[in-house]
Image (tube, rainbow, N blue to C red; front, side, top):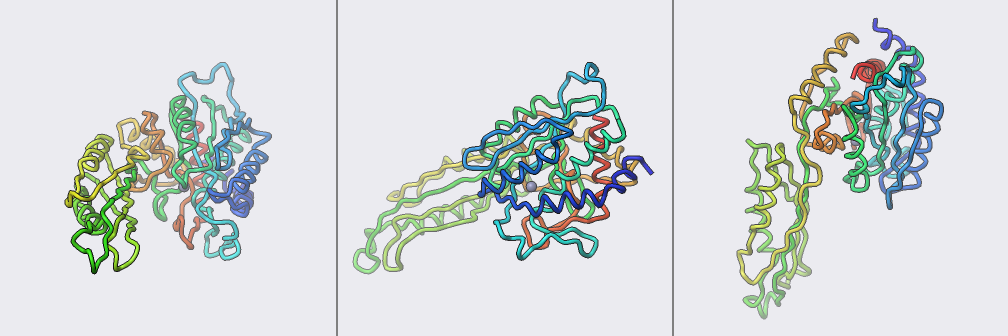
Length: 383
Ligand SMILES: [Zn+2]
């Protein structure tokens, strides 16, 4: 057995205990004080092995970058970039979720809010670093972990920090959950955007003055039909009007209506084309006015040659741990979209193996804790 794997297995109960502490420290995106408590826990647990720097994040909790003290002669540290691990401290679960979903170990799994997305990845990474120190394994690069507090709400305040860190990095390891119960890594993610379409019509009494009204609702319905046509499944473009609203009463011709639309693209260059299609929308009923806002929030993570090469390297390292690693693509975005888009090879989905992110069955497989931790240690050692 590989020494990293046997060491990770021997630490498994401690990893579970740390993960329990993390899950029981709830940290919803919109509760900055709770997120700050979680960040303080991370800083406290790495006090002896790293140097932490925090960043203020407006109305969100603080972001934190922890640089680790690792074996290896410093003059020999490679100058062509650090190795960046990337995670987030926030979860989608409101404070008090633990009452219905307590942390527990059952059926070979660990359960609880945020256990998969993505506290497991953070716990594994801290132990991976700890193992390299314990075994005195030399590490060629500077190794930093960036944990942002607003990933689940779009990463608005952390994006610039993540991109700047990625530009200084030779590779990025994203500690998000793997795909499915085999824990496939993610080598491509769709780009994600949102548009808002607002229609202003003309209000009128539906009985007395019908023909003088210009219905914003009817106009919006026709626009939605048109917008839905922007979907191009073969190119991996989806356009989803996810929320609509409008009107005031049944006997009033609606003066206002609005739609919020989610877009996903596989190729960066489709972003501009799609934005153009939205900007070119014109009212069917000339008495209505359209206002379009929005655009791409996360560029796609494209599977470049460098990304594929990084995955092959990970796959080879996993073989030594008895794991046959697979890759996957997803329509969901992560902060890995930003790091890949600045041109830094990014390996995503290295965290927990399980299912139920953002759902009541959120859980990770206990018997994949050791190999995931060992794989992270191998990657830090080798990249
Ligand atoms: Zn996540």
